[in-house]
Image (tube, rainbow, N blue to C red; front, side, top):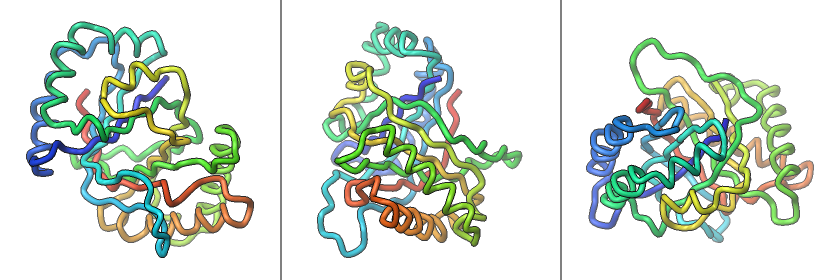
Amino acid sequence: MLTLIAAIRRKPGMTHSAFLRHLHHVHGPLSAANPLLIRSYVQNHVFDASFGVEGDPAHLTTFGRDSVTELRFDDMGALAATMSHPYSREVIGPDGARFNDLPSALALLTRSEGLVPPPVSGTGTAPVKVLHFVRGAAQLEQDDVVDRWQTAHEQVIAEGGPQAGTVRGWVQHRQVPGAEGALRHFGGTVAVYAGVSALYYGSEEEALAHFPSYERSLRERSDGTGRFWDPSRSFALYSREVTIF
């Protein structure tokens, strides 16, 4: 299973509320009306964010994201067929241009590894999760980055404490190559990230209180074993998950 992840922000002059309203109530139903070969479609509505490292002036990524789209496909063929279909090109694409600031969009294709299943909510409330976009260290190969990243995460969780105990689920989406043309459906350029981790929490308050200490511990583990990522070019989006289909 492949997951296409796109972090987008609203067009100039558009409010965050208007962006989410269109994304959820207009764009979502258009996609659900003809899902083509998409297995599932999840929107993550961002309510807060963090970026870079305290005391580091080199914030070198364009931040400010309003949502993150997750589209799941069985394989590369299903992805290519969906993105080249007339419905995608003539209906979904033009509608996306009404709210998506296309030049700033970030998109990557991933495969999930290191899965701790997220909790199943029976309350009807949207799950809270932090999407951590990790830029790998320049001197390392992709596989080295994600393997060290997973090990560091497991060590932080094993240490215990609130920063570990409040994580209800964890999914590591590892970037895979080969879909650059399809990813440009979202505009902008293909993102150069090692991947995205999704950490699930019980509430917005838990996420805001404990993810920063989790991220600091992850960074300390990285510094102690040879840095595998670039915190100055990485960022985290606090969101509520909305399943479209």
